[in-house]
Length: 197
Image (tube, rainbow, N blue to C red; front, side, top):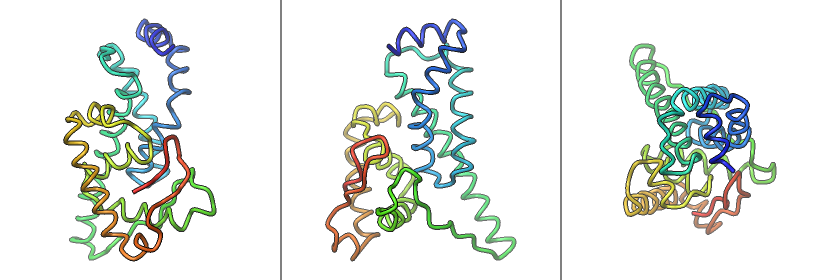
């Protein structure tokens, strides 16, 4: 189904591209939101993702799935935002002697009864190194396979496996007693299989 729609979109059919936007916008938004943990920015970056996809659609060679290509754009947007925020926050601390902590973030796709657990999860996730955070988000929140993640991150499946192992180990350490008490997470999926560690 995507192939025909993509071909029409490549030919300049805006209605076909709007179909792709409707199909992928929730997943793109969820991915960006999980990485940057800022709903307003996630909305803007999601729109930027689809603008870039439209402008560069002719470069999509269909060697991978359209969704994978779109995830790559979305992840790059989110990581670019995180790098700018890190620099900005560093200058704020240096020049203004201020620290701006991020408010406890809960993804809006999480059910109310799971919010306390989700808050702890996202707080721990936000402290992981960039590539581990990306791999963890794509695998545990979005349900992508190792192969799909390797394509999004332009890496190998073996490297993705290593990132996920280190990310899971890091999450366990950061969550400490909370993880030891619960043993695992059973949060409902946003668009994927859930959030087991």
